[in-house]
Image (cartoon, rainbow, N blue to C red; front, side):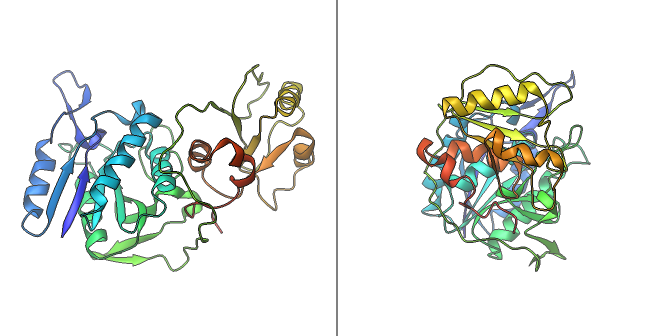
Length: 316
């Protein structure tokens, strides 16, 4: 079985120097070399590396290079593994999910919470389960292996500060390994794809993101679209004069404002202002998936299609 492997860097491909500085190694760290050598008797690995970088330095242009490499390898591979850092894993995972929505093989992103020489690192276990998932034909599309869990890459939430743990929105995990056997989560639900995603993301877009904070002063900006995040209860500072002025200007300029985090049942008084502010409420989805979807959609489709699934990112 041919398995494509794309190295992009991240902690899983990094080493710590004598000063304690962690940097990606341009080439295989010894633990990765040992892993792939041990599995090479059963699988034929095809290696590519479009770049080596820490994931906090990820750009849309770099993600597009990963997409191109995936398509190159997909013609002769039963599955593809991508190494990546944890900082922007949720963003790259969503972006790859959009651009690779029609791919007919599993693409598994793997990362590590610590460099592989650290005994606490999950990187090797994640690699083992990525290979198992491909071998056992657990599904098609883009996934993330973390511990015993397999996540839809479009469902990841951004990691909590000080933690590298990978989690799906509302714990909607795709499945998990039990004694080495993949078992799909019987409660996992996903809708059919409704709109077609482009083969790459538009890196020239200017997407502004804001989060409600006490006494926050919204800046005077121009943007292609605005993503407004809410508090956990789906509320925002709708009485804030600065937000009201900001939304008025965005509406005047024809700039769409998408609200993330509001949902049916979160019927607080502040929600009554959403329509007046011109906010377009999103379905239940992760904030990284909402953000990256704005780079995946063409300008004329942003307002119409952000609420429609491309790659099963909406929780139903």
